Image 1: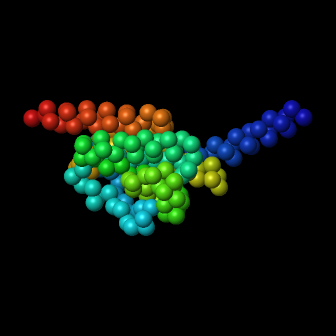
Image 2 (image 1 turned 90 degrees about the horizontal axis):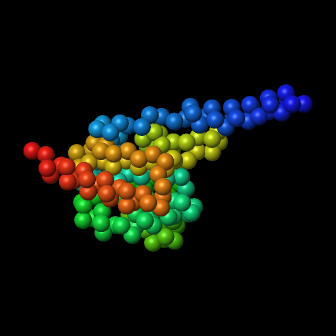
Image 3 (image 1 turned 60 degrees about the vertical axis):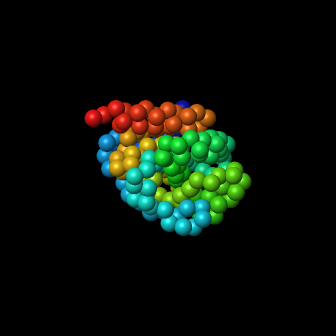
Length: 183
């Protein structure tokens, strides 16, 4: 009986973990060019990374619209929008949810920055942020700070939604200050 339970446990662990481990692609390295993309926003209009060349971009991936942690993270980015504007930075959120889901989420939470629908999960995978539990896929809570030249300046993985916006703003200040100091 114990052997059967152990075998069942091993099978369950394999079924849950193997697809997850196999689905993770490599995150682009700091200093590398950020993978370009075009995805629809909550308004249904296409948004391309190249459209923001010359600005700092906070590209954050999150698991699911209208869940507690994702709502908190989005709310904090929304509250800090004036601070990002002062730093010539834009915030773009990405999940596997649909345009319609993003539209409802933005309306409910009062969000005015772009949420992008990666329904075929290609962009999420290109940024090494796809998590796959067999039939259930979602974006891992990762963020990429992209500099005005389109290079990845900083990568954050497994972020805390409560303090993440403040963390990104502090890093943005440090990076901008060091860019001014360099000859």
